[in-house]
Image 1 (cartoon, one colour):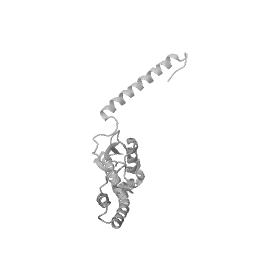
Image 2 (cartoon, rainbow, N blue to C red):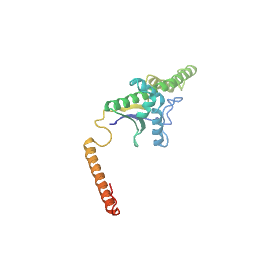
Image 3 (cartoon, rainbow, N blue to C red):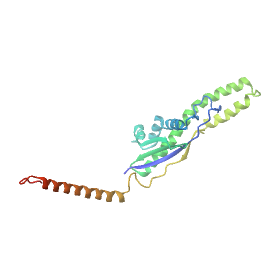
Length: 211
């Protein structure tokens, strides 16, 4: 049996007019929401996230195996990116989906932190040059506050909306349905074979034995 579990990530793209995170590669809105969500799924589905997930799972897991087990895609027309994992066990499927989701968010924070550090240094340099009483001082202070939040681990565009729960049944039809269908299919095949054999016997020339 194969079990499937899905964790959900909430995507909150920033408007194009937002100047708080200039120089930082945050997800921004576009004229096509579908393209924005596809970009979000691409950011979540990274090689680094797969490597980090493999390191947190059992020793026999590799990044390639994680990538084979996990699928990341937008969920319909919503602002949700679904992280779906498949495994031979129900608890394992849920664990993979959750570990991958948290690993992707962790890797995202690492990437943003490097960019934010550079942006903070540039803003502090501007603050020293312009002076605290300049007209730009309040905007610089506001941006610094928001950048410090991101530096401390708060991603303004991605968050875990709903962790994966342990599935109660495997993929495909339940066993109580599979067994009757298999019996019916076997009976049908046996009937067809018997009818074909009878037709061959009737159509055989005299003296020819059909087995």
